[in-house]
Amino acid sequence: MRRASGSIFGLAYGDALGAPTEFLTMHQIHQRYGKDGPRELTGSPALVTDDTQMAIAVATALLDALENPPFTPDLITPMWRRRFIDWLHSPDNNRAPGNTCLRACRGMDSGLPWIEATQHNSKGCGANMRVTPIGLVPGFTDETRSGAAQLQAALTHGHPTGLAASELTAFATHWLLQGMPPADLPSALRDHSHAQRTTYHQRWLGDLWKHSSSDSPEAFISQGWDECLQALDNLDTALTLSKRDSDPCEITGAGWVAEEALATSLLCFLLFPEDPVSAISRGAASSGDSDSIACLAGAYAGAHLGMDAWPPTWRTQIEYADRLTRIGTAWDRPNTP
Image (cartoon, rainbow, N blue to C red; front, side, top):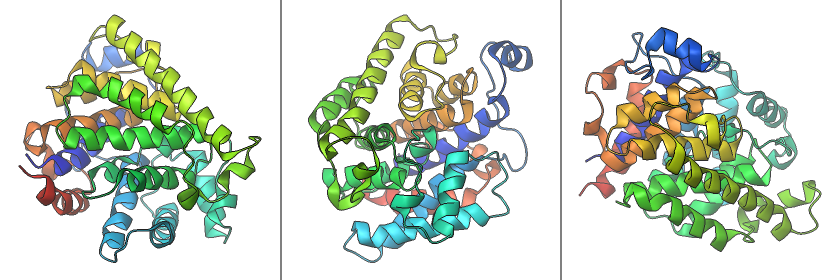
């Protein structure tokens, strides 16, 4: 099924499909694309945004780190830092990147420790738009997957909700890759949130919590899990009330912040669990952060259905196809039935 390839390419496909609609109203989207939203990639190549660029940075550093085991925070942190700074200076970094990522990366580029460079009050979706590669890596313990997901978020977004939402995004991708039925995702994510609610990953995050107003690491991280649990409540409501052709942001939020990006992208995927193009099209046809919503929906859909579920011509049309192929191929082998 090549699920890892399906996921990383699906992320890029959703990103490219949602990029042109990011700042359009629903009325404008319907006028331009019809009620179903965009369903075809445009351009040769079909350009992605900073969402895919940073996901590639996360994934490439992971591949490098896994060639030099054991995988530890001390090993991966400078690798992610270097990749993020490279992205900052890349001539391709001209796709309306988020201010939080830019400010944090500039701080790291100036020599600040990441724990000082990160934007402590930001829980923007930049924390989890790039995290799904961590869900594709085989062999991680749950603690390593959790800590790594939170750390990659923390390098730029220091708010606890960005950390928790990133962990849930990575685990959703991982569970789908391992064959979890999509309908089981909401309850699994809720159970995980309750189980992890007071777990602070000191080995991965250091003293990040001390830069907040919380009086303990447990109080710091529980704020993030509580906000994610509320987002999952909204997801449950949306799954009951939302229509397939309605704005997916109406109940779960516009996706500019991490917990909303998690919930709304899951909604788009769960409305169309066996139809990946419709899932990312619904994310693209939204009033919110359409590229981030669609890219996460695409990552889930590809992890569930595999590479062959996507239109075959898209594989050579999408920007960075060679890098996406390297990433997917590296992690397909251990997961191919």
